[in-house]
Amino acid sequence: MTGDGTRCVHGGLERGAVGEPVHPGPVLSATFHLGLPHEPPAHDFYSRPDNPTFRVLESAIGELEGGVCTSFSSGMAAIAAVLRLAAKPGAAIVLPSDGYYLARVLAQDDLAPLGVEIREVATAGAWDDQIVDGATLVLLETPSNPGLEVCDIRAVAERAHAAGALVAVDNTTATPLGQRPLALGADLVVASDTKALAGHGDVVLGHVTARDPILADRIKTARTRGGAIPGPMEAWLAHRGLGTLDLRLARQAANAHALALALTTHPAVSDVRWPGLPNDPSYVVASKQMRRWNGVLRFTLRSKAQVGEFLAASRLVVSATSFGGLQTTADRRERWGDAVPPGLIRLSAGCEDTDDLVDDVLGALDRIRA
Figure 1: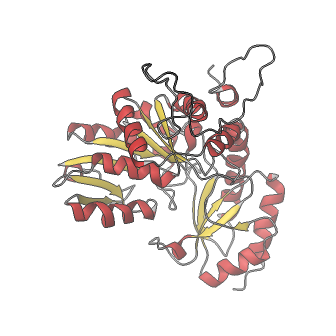
Figure 2 (figure 1 turned 30 degrees about the vertical axis):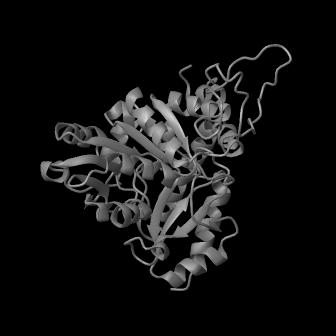
Figure 3 (figure 1 turned 90 degrees about the horizontal axis):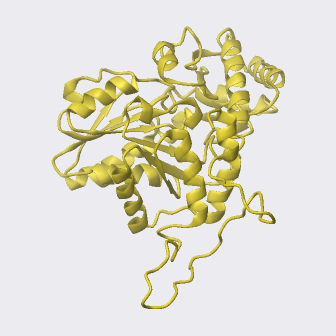
């Protein structure tokens, strides 16, 4: 199976026997039959180490990303497992200064007191030898959240590997269809599946995919010991949502493209960023490493008050954090502590009709007071 849609629809599923369900449900059991005391336990004996529903989802994601996938209870649980795996007193971990803020908070508050040096570098900054020297892990986020900045995964991976560091890429914004970091030299992919992968805003979930099976075993062991497992129902819902990722991403990217073009000429808007625009500063690098464009863009209004006026005037744009869902959402990122202007909006294009969405957004912007 080579097509994105085919892999999304059929990933993790096997053709069943006559009379078996085409869409098997979640395995809602904490325990499994052990057999007699002198017999070794079967693969499934307790749902913290593993569960058949986890494996179905992990098989589907792993096929898309080209590695061995381990699911987690959230994207932050996935990032935490990767950071802690690499944390060693006296060594350094490199993080994006403009990436998701909680990853930096976790590193500074939980790992730095243990003697781990935390280095921060801008996604589109200078990735020189000094940045990676003495590091055990380089975490990239490209396109970054919320700035939509991009870095060259292959170039950074080569430099980091030469210094002996692992490379992990937060691929949440791009999705497994938009970018395959393992094929570009990364060791690990981490993502929040709460976003576009599950796609319906009804689960909190994450995953880590490793290129090396031995590294994947270490990740899974960390999950088992730490207990940050997904619930079977959440894993099942995410797998169900994954089946339409190809279709949803196509509409979301088309909507993001149309909005980005429309916003660049609106007088109330400045600093529109979306990596799929040919004049975007990230376009050259992004077009080399992204297979498909994403549905998230950002732009800036003149003030926090104008963001409120825009959201109040829109009929279709929902004020909400997170992204990648069916409905278009907007999030004023400065409210969460991101080092961005007060009027910066991260907008996640949904699956509405393109003309309806563009008309609504432009109409709402027209009603902003100068």
